[in-house]
Image (tube, rainbow, N blue to C red; front, side, top):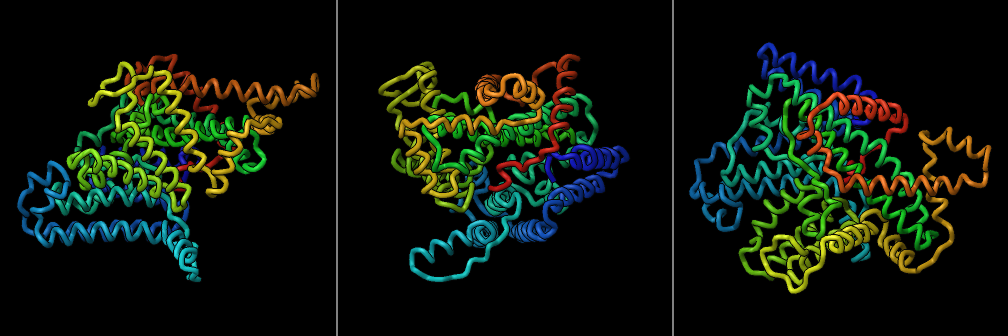
Length: 517
């Protein structure tokens, strides 16, 4: 089920809200949690009923392992384990806890490998050794990368003695809570289960609810009105990779960059807004990343919860920055390589992750700094923030050649197009994809009055759309506006109009990009 669909907005969501607050109103807290988990499973199974067996088996096996760990006597050095999941902390674990830790990691990564990477692995085995193993063509279950990482973080901390064993109902609600189930944010047990156990969170809060609606509508507008519109140009451009000229390549990659940002940040805004409607606070996942002046800063603002996971459960256990600068740089590169692979089973994602890793490693070397920014290590050269922003934005967009292309050959062709300096007028075809309903009447009138100007009007509209996107990325993010702005009557009317505009545009429903990851 999609957030941007009639069935979700007008049927599923009202039923879920009424049931949740209705059961809690009469003190039926366990029934309320069971109802919310059941609704979340309906939400997940709506895409494909067979997905339910996968997620329920994953939940059942992880909970069973947590239960077994609960039977193990308390291990030594618990306080040390609570400070960091480092190798030093693990030295105090009992043998059974070590076995639980290894079993939890193998269990979750094994499930993820089978459904997401098995065919990729076999393809490369066949290519490298000239074998002919059969591919399974496994359908990737939605959200498996997200709910697997959620449970992996829980089971690691259970084995390290950093969290307690919870009731199955609380654990089930934590994993399946539908706003974040399909595409994040990647939530942690310690920020979710205590909220479900807090009875004050079961009461309806009008202010919290209103700000949840505000944030949901802003996210919906990002997706429906902006991301899907930019997607028209991006999809056409990447389907025409080998015929693009230099100018059209620039605008196609910019279109995809804005599509990706408004799509995923829009989903995250909607997820946080939905959480607030249920009086549950979800973590911020985007903090105006396109305002960053360095790649390192960018990754402190983009997909924050994924970066948090890799830092906590990969970077720190590998030694982080405690084992010297060289080891720190290697660890940094490794987590970005893994991040690329997390996004998809293809060499294009690995190349994208490697490029991001190299850029962050370059930042960590401290050769070039940004004027006026706090830095732990002095830099040899400093550049103004505006120049740092240009480099950061340009380099991230260049990396998207790998991220979006179907193959390495396609990505290399885009680089070739970009640096060819060619111009064939392909930009008019790209702009013509903006044949949306909002400008239909204006286009028809212009087509009758001045037929030869229609293509130029599309081009002008494209420039206006890009100007709007650049304006929006430099404004305060939606989360800050929904949290800190006073809900005046003017803003409320504006949100109502924006919501109606989005609802009218739902006739062209599209899935979220991160459903593919």
